[in-house]
Amino acid sequence: MLDGLTATLETSHMFALVGPNGSGKSSLLRLLARQEAPSNGRLDYRGRSIAAIGRREFARSVAFLPQFPPPADSMNVRELVALGRFPWHGPLGRFTERDAEKTEEALRRTDLLQMADRIVDTLSGGERQRVWLAMMLAQETNCLLLDEPTSALDVAHQVEILALIRELSYERAMGVVIVLHDVNLAARYCDEILALKSGRLIARGPATEIVTSTVLEQIYGIEMGVVPNPSTGLPMSYVR
Image (cartoon, rainbow, N blue to C red; front, side, top):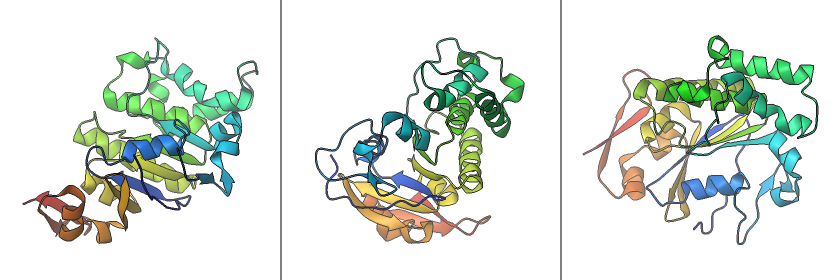
């Protein structure tokens, strides 16, 4: 349960939600995605209550990727990515030339053209995550909400996916809110980190303000040390 949380999230920024299990990270993301309705309080998107925005209009602006995406039901990559165009043509609308162009553009931008005819369920975890990301790009939204998109990936694919998301965020002026368990990845790829604990926002700021021994101990309840990353200079944490 979230309690007393107030925050404004800007476009063209990548925000990480971090905190221990049960802190409210996924709950907050589902509220932002309208997967759940708040019991009290208010959620606004561009100055309007999200509850007052029509379903298709909201889907044209906000894309949500849950922690466990649904099965692809034997679809190939291009078919799944094309589903991102659904908010633009509706269930009875015709798949237009623009829909096809946006689908191909998303495939190209995520480096999936060479596997566009492959069945999604036959791909590796990292490749499947790129397919879902491509579907969200085809959706042409202004905001991406991602719930632990790297949780089942090895380190190489984690870096690949987060680097791509960051690049797309800046390139398309999209706002991104992403749940991450690895605070070092959050520090490396996100503009700001929001730390939750027991449903409350207890810290917010850039990596230099959040990835400190004092704040990390407040978040996770254990002693942690911090050193500068030798490559980037950004703070990097470890358990003492």
